[in-house]
Length: 166
Ligand code: NI
Image 1 (cartoon, rainbow, N blue to C red):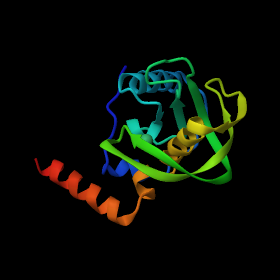
Image 2: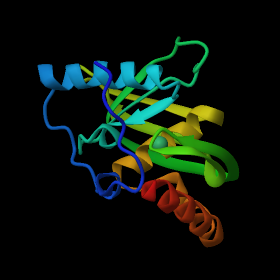
Image 3: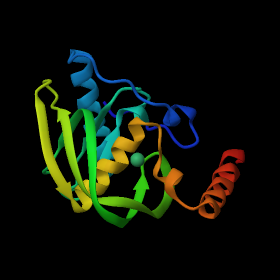
């Protein structure tokens, strides 16, 4: 089932999410729905708080949006960031019609659990590393627009306020 994606400035996007404590049929259903929602919206990543579930769960597929060949599901991910600062051109399904360059780290090491609760870990660079940092930010209530300049943010907020009045 495709779920509605919360839109900035919904306050639920700014809360810290809780760890997943058990794999349940509801969790599996949520994972399935999140993947379906991400694909339907041509996204490459989606975090549970974006569909109103305040738990530490993300889905991503950086082979998309054209191909759908690399679905990754991360439960309770923990990132270790390495390398130099790099520019990352980003957008977000929760911030419509907006893209900006933000600063990320070059390399990421991930520790997480898979949908069955088994531990998994891997190293990432490039788009996957950027996507991991973006999605895991969502779990701490941080959006990529929290990492842009104050001037750019003020301009975005003005645009959003105008849209809300309509
Ligand atoms: Ni996002």
